[in-house]
Image (cartoon, rainbow, N blue to C red):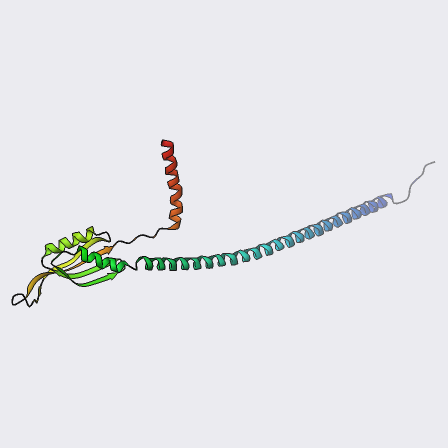
Length: 213
């Protein structure tokens, strides 16, 4: 006996395929939404962590800037104290400088020379005076150069002049009017850093000398 299936089996298969497709599409869509949500949460968490790090670094940088400013202030105060100390030390060392200068001028001045004015600016002394001859001025410059506290004598100007002398003839005495400068020798201030740098060098020289021995 022959059986004929009159049910719409093709329509049923099509509906089944559509249902499976709908289920799979729903699953994939749900999985995609879940991945997007997970990724968004992960990125939000990373951004939050990075913002916290940035805030921490900003706060630490502010602290460092404050400390650097304090260090710079301390450096300036230290430099001011060092400058004041140097000034005080220079004043103490130069307290008797004027006496030494006058003493050396008296000792090194040959006969026949008369000073009319002595000026000092820093370590430069300007001497104005009269000499009986230009040779005596040359002798004075050599004497000043041989002095332990003078150096670099320099003749600025010398010219003939007439000095009124009651004991001389009618028109006075002819002399040499001169202007010269001389430099005062002062002890140089030693730099502590240079001393520190010099110590290792001296040690190396001593070691090398020992090795050579």
